[in-house]
Length: 74
Image (cartoon, rainbow, N blue to C red; front, side, top):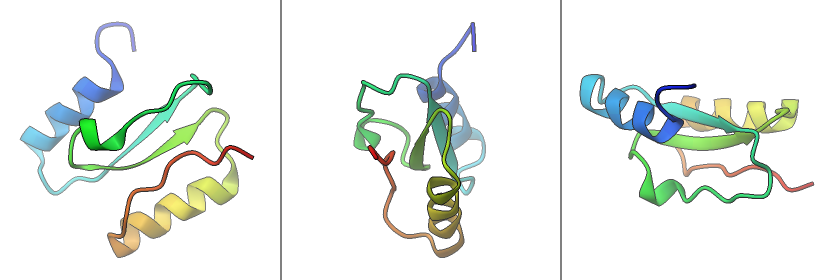
């Protein structure tokens, strides 16, 4: 996104729609995103390209409202 990044968008969503859960996706495989420093609505982070198992795990998080899921390093 050329004008804003995922963190800014997640913060905006938290303000405008506090019940909406957010999943971030990043192509920066070497960087770790600290979900605790981002919007409280972020339930997980996917690495590009996302793996089906990681997407399924995050959908379970959203469905059950459980702890955040970080990218799988395997």
